Length: 201
Length: 189
Image 1 (tube, each protein chain N blue to C red):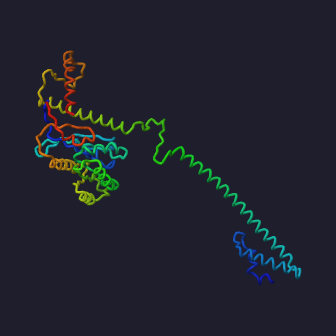
Image 2: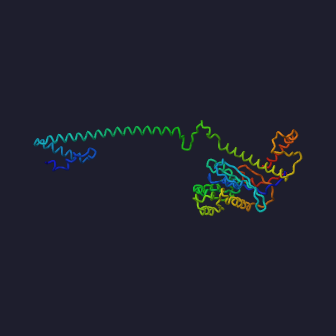
Image 3: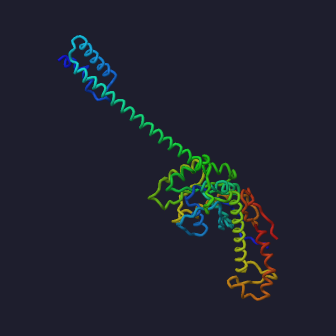
């Protein structure tokens, strides 16, 4: 049953305070849709989207975590397997911005050392309710040496760009190897299992 | 009158009982003492002295009355506070088991029942099944689009039509095909 639907599998993770729009950002990217009703994510969920970068078909397995503290033990066990982490805050919610350092600390504690990080200031369509200036987001991103985008899942601003940029950054670090069939590994804390290749009959 | 000459000490008699200071009491004593001296020397001003002694007794009566009232009020307030304190302490005993503990109402149908580990396992299984479904859907799409050749023994099944319309032979093929598909989906995980 040898068949190759993609060349590489990248595992990404979305983290950030509850209600900042992680699920909406992902839903916009994976399904190009937006839903205004707020449904809190239970623990952990994922979506798959295949993109093409530099002639390579890259399957993005994107893990969406619950922002609520009560799911913390579940969500942190998924940090280890991530190759890229998107830290999302809400530009209309100062607390979500203040908590960035807490989330960065979580990454340091639970993720791989070489994980690609990215900061997203979501809900940038809500300019009238903005409390976090764009410059503040840029500054904290610069301080930690990570990329930064202001996004809007609702208005579809910078969503695809953010995901593709993160995927490109990971691709740049990926050692060149023969394309092969990768596995969709859904176990938590699986380390580099996403990279393992498998010989197909 | 001699009294008017000594207006200062005698004025203590005119004061309100609760305005009286220790100095006023000394003044009163002074005036009474002086008047008593007069009685002993000349026998005059006896009615004045009587009036003042009555006034002093009135003042003391008021003071003692008010004092007793205050004591009674304070006792009542103390009892009220004691009852209130007992009530709050009682609530703490039943409602707050500890600073970091939660009491669960066993009659609440929405009460927490499952552990974090159980939730973790259920989510893992859900995500596993979701991944399997995605793989199967992808595979199905490839068969449908003809990018993958049909294997011998495989039968094309119209998933849109209800299974009741399948004839016996097709159902048999279907059954033989199932384990193979399952293997495929799982091997991909």
